[in-house]
Amino acid sequence: MSATPNVEPRRILLAYYAATIVFLVLDYGLGVNVRVAGLQGFPQLRAGYYLAIFACFGLVIRRPAWSTAIGVIESLATLVTLIFSVALRSMFVSDQMLESGAGFLSLAELLNFLISGSIAWFAWQRGMTQLFGPRR
Image (cartoon, rainbow, N blue to C red; front, side):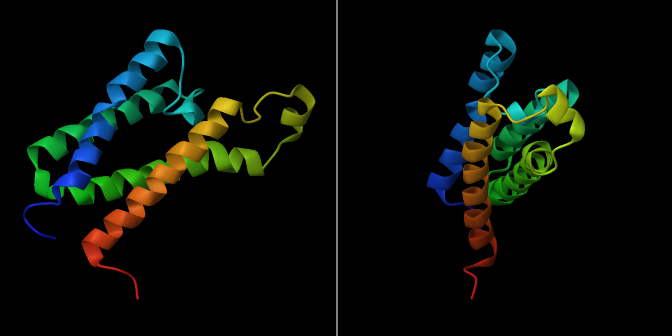
């Protein structure tokens, strides 16, 4: 990894992290949880996620050379969070879910999974290529 990261991916990463303030206002101010819909039932994890994203934002600003590594780690963490909060719940339906109808994925959770998952997968793949070169 070079000492000076590619400027364009860093700008995209900074914009992505900076946009978190918009999602935070939507979530806590207006009750529209788009960014972390899968964590709606886990307020501490949801707040921790926002805090972690702001920490990534601060690190990318203070340590530009770390941008790619930070993006890779954060995107992997996002993928793992999505898998545990959304995918596993949709794959393992319990009797209680069938009886009560509660606990199934909402449209917001599904959209969050598709959008966030796609972006995180792309960011992880691109970051890994930048760090280690193309796969052979």
